[in-house]
Every structure is written in structure tokens, then in C-alpha cells.
Image (cartoon, rainbow, N blue to C red; front, side, top):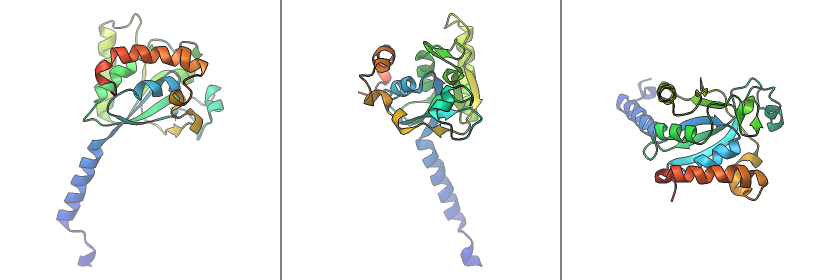
Length: 200
């Protein structure tokens, strides 16, 4: 039976390797209105590895876009962002999140109205939770916005990836009216404000 027992040094080495691997990427999940806009914004940032649009925070399993849009499922449109913390930290992602939408309006971003468009942060660790709450309080205390930030800060739940046609939407549909009149102006404003973090 001794031959079946893992070598102690091997176990430690494997654990160290797992810890190192775990630190090479991290995940953030944000809802800030239409996920087409959120995806297009965060695709601009150096250090963001991948983005998936989807649904989170509701009650129905495997919801469709139509079901989420009805408001009956309770899900928010969100983007799940995998990033390299050596190139961009969570604090900077939070800054981009709050800068790129109005976090003071309840269940609304511009003409997009409904609980699926709520401002929400789904945190993946205690550190993310504490960081998000700290900066939300700082922004409110400093009156950074005319009205109080009402962004929901909740633990990450099951993420349901949206339909394929929602992925990389702006880049594939830049000539569509919504992209031209809603997303493009947001991108231009964001790129100017976050010039130091934009992918060159």
C-alpha cells in the first residue's frame, strides 16, 4: 500500500504549482446595462484576456435572451471578464466599471430599462467584495456623482453564457444603429478617459 501513497514533496510541489497557476488569471463579473456595451468597453483594456456576455443573479436555469428581457427571470445582463492581475488590477477594473455607466440609476441605463440592466458587481472573493464596497463608499462620500451610487454588490452566482450571436457583438455589428448611436460614443469617451490602459 505504500506505493499508493503520494510522496509528501510531490504533494507540496503540486499545491505550489496550483497556487501559482491560480494567480496568473482572475475573474471579474459586472453588469452595467446592455452587455454589448460592457463587452465593448472592457475589450479595450490591456490585461483583459477574455470576455463572455451572459446572465447572472436570477432564478431560472439556462435562461434565454428573450426570457431575461421579459424581466421575469431576475437575471442581469453581465460580462464575465478573465484578466491578468499582473497587467491590470481589480481596482482599475472597478474604476472602468463605474466610469463607463451611470451607477446611480435604478434598473436603467439610458433607454434600456428593466432589472436585467441593473448596475451590479458579482464578486468572486472576499477581497473583491471588500474592494468594491470600499470604493463604492468612497465615491459616495466624495460625491463623485450627483446622486448616490446604488450598485448592487453580491456574491457570484451561476453564470449562464449568452447566445453565440451576443458574443463579440460590437466588433461584428459595428454598423448596426445601436452600435453607432449608443456604443460608439461610449467607447470614444471611455478611450479618452482610460488612455493609459487601452490596448495599443
